Amino acid sequence: MVGYIRVTNEFDTPVQVFVSKYNGGSDDWFTLQPGGSDIWNRKEGNGGGWEVVVFKDGFDSTRVGRYVKVNCNVIFRSFDDVLVTG
Image (cartoon, rainbow, N blue to C red):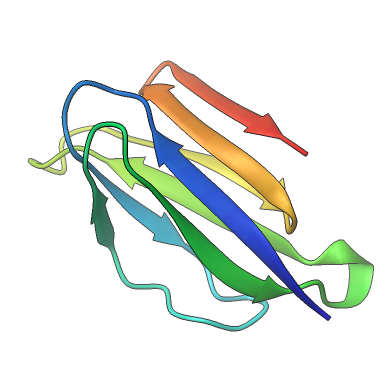
């Protein structure tokens, strides 16, 4: 069964985002503009389908990540404030 990870950028500058591909899909880096969001489709997989969501700044000097279960929302507010719901 196909699930999703919705990522939203609530920060005031663009942010690069990466979603691992343990359960299918692409693991390329993508840019999310302020207020932007996107959905990564991932299989739910055995054990619930877990993925890593990583954010980096435009200079690749700061990174933060979360290990999340498929079918969730990840809200990036800052490198010190990443909310996972669902």
